[in-house]
Image 1 (cartoon, one colour):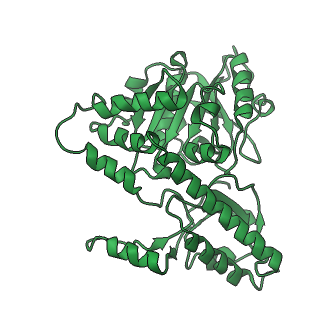
Image 2: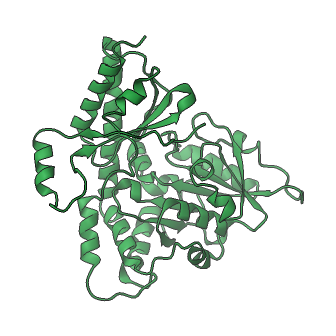
Image 3: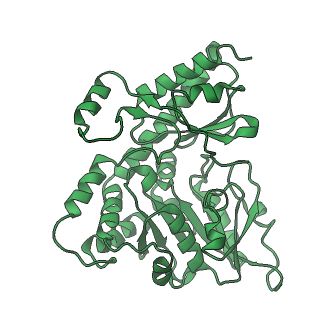
Length: 385
């Protein structure tokens, strides 16, 4: 089984020293949780970035037109156009599954199918929503690194005109992938060109698109519009937002009925200004890059720390299963080590059958968090073969 499982029990890492004192001092006396607690389970575990909270506060007060007729949602169209190249149509939604399902629904007729990697979030982690809510068929292909290629796409890109087969009409890729790997702009361009030659459209699931942009050190448009992407699901929640994603249409001819589908899928926010304000806060300056770059750097520090300790012999039996290109580290551990580590640090099994785990870093992960975790891994593996 792939995909994170529910093995994230136990307390999580704690910040120590001056930082912990500062966090405790800032905590509300009414808080129900310890704000010094950290973990490596998911970038969804982190809170809201202070600049995003400030943007929500600034958008509050007075009345604004509901359901997207507000000035913040209008500004959001302009902000995305500057980043991705205009014109664009931006549809803010509540969450990533809603963005993916609504986007793909708008790109397909009822008889349409989506080609995706078997590890794709739409296949593994959306509880059948694309099929049950979206009414579409997923045609999946195995990809050891989570990345599709034109050759892999061709395994399912066939059967057009056959009334017995769901028609493959969209390719969906994820940037960065569920395995923490990256497509280069050239690789996406190759996929887009191949899909378009076959009469298909290209959707990009960008739940961690900011991490990809930071790692590649290129503008967002370099691997979206300029690479031939037709429709984008843009993620904010994993990168410091409270909630809020967006369906971004780069080619209007690729979609139909998005405004109606967003409402049908229960993704139309009445007070949309507060969703739009968060995405503006991330994108109007460089916040999205600062937060993502930091998360990526903490993952790189975690891997480097383990590699150095392994070379010195203080960590034993840990092997990496994927390159660490963004903010996730994938590794295998000796038997029993993961459960012992989880007594102090929260994280998920990825493939429990082979002892593979996933460690995620967030915008608020600290060097102290990482170093404490590396020390714990050393402690728990010191007797491993």
